[in-house]
Amino acid sequence: MNKPDRRLVIVVRADPVICGHSGEARNLAEVALTRGFTDVRLLTWPIPVLQAAGLPLKPLDRLLPYSEGITVERPEAVGDYRVPDGRHLAGLTGRLVELLADPIPTVCLSMYLVPHQTVVVDAVTAARAAGLDPQVHTIAKAVGSDVTNVIRQCLREGRFGAATVLFTTFLANDEVVAVSEYTKDEIIASALEVDASCGTSFAEQCRSRVTVSYPPIDSSAYVDLDDDEVDAALAKRGLERDGYILFLSRVARAKGIYDLVIAYGQMRSRDKVKLVVAGNGPALEHVQAMAKEDDRIIFLTDVDDEEKPLLMRGCAAYALPTKPEPDFVETFGIALAEKMLAGGGPVITTLTGGTGEAVGDTAIIVEPGDINALAEALDHAVLEMPEAEKAEMASRALAKAMTFDRAAVFDDLFPKLDG
Image (cartoon, rainbow, N blue to C red; front, side, top):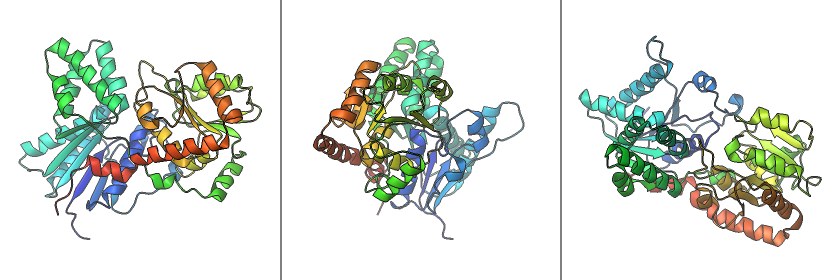
C-alpha cells in the first residue's frame, strides 16, 4: 500500500449519531477522496460511550459503509482512573498526536467545539512541544449547539471562565468557521458579553476571523429518485404518495413536535393525510403517549439514510415547526435542505435561527409556536395548493438546496492543494 501524502482528520461525534454534523463529517470525508486527500480519518467515540450518553442513534445494522480510503477510528479510554470523560478524551487526543507524528501534511477539522476542538488544540500543542513538528492546518467549525447550548448556558449562569476557555481554544485554530450566518452573529454577540465581563477582545477577533460554511449535503442521494423505489418504500410502511405529512427530525420540543401533534388534531385535512413522525429524541416517549389514542399518527424510529429521501419524496407536506428554546435554536436546518432536494410536497417551517438561510423563499412560513397558523398552513398545502404552484415551489427549492451540495461546500472550506 502506498504511503499517504495528504491526510484529512475530522474529529466529531460522527455516525451513528442522528445529528447534522455526523452527516457533515461523512460528506466532507467522501469529497476529500476526490480532492487529493489520500488518507481520510474520522476520529470519534466508541459506540458504547455514545449509547451511554443517551444520544439518538441510527440503526447500527444499517449504517451506510464509507468509501475505501476513509477510516473511522474510535479510540478506547486511556488508563483506569475513574474519570470516564477524561479517559476517553485522552484516547482521542493521544491518537491524534500519533497521527500528527507522521510526516504527512494534514488538515484537521473539529466539529462541535466541546470537546472536539479541545482534542485538536491539545494534540497540536503536545506534538509541537514534543518536537514532532507536525505539518498541520487546523479548522474549527462551530455548529448550533456550541452557541445555543454551551456558550449561552455559560452566560446565563455567569460562568464566564468556561466561556473564556471555549473562545480561547476556538481562536487558537488556524481557521474558525460557523455553520450559518445566524451562528456567526450569535458567536459575536456571545463574545461581546464575555468581553464586557472579562475585559477580553474576543468579539473583535470573531468578527474579523469567523467565516461561514453551510452544511454539506450529498445531493445525489436525494435527487432523481426512482418512482418505483419510492412506492415500494411507502408500501412497506403502509403509506401512499401524498397520503401523509412528514416530520423527520430529532424528536424534541425545540423542533416543534408538540405543536405539530396538536395542530394535526385540529386540521380539516386529517382524514385525508396521516402524520408520520420519523426519528428519535428526548420527547419521543411523551409524544407517543400524547398520540396513543390517535391511530393516524405513525411513529417510525428505525428510518435509515436510504429510506429517508424516499419518505421525503412521497409526502404531501414536510413540517418542521422549530422554535427557540433556552437550550437549543435551529441554527440552519439540514433536514429542510435535504427535503428540498428530494422533492415531494411543500416544506412548512418557521423563521427560527438560521432556517431562513436554508429555505430562502421556497417554503411556507408560519410563526414559531402558532399552532392555529400551522394547522391552516398544512391544510392549505394538502387541500388548496394547485399542482402548478407546488411544482414551481419545488423547482425553486431544488435550485436553492443545490447550493449546499457537498462538493461545492468542501471546495469553499478547505485549503486548495498545491499542484
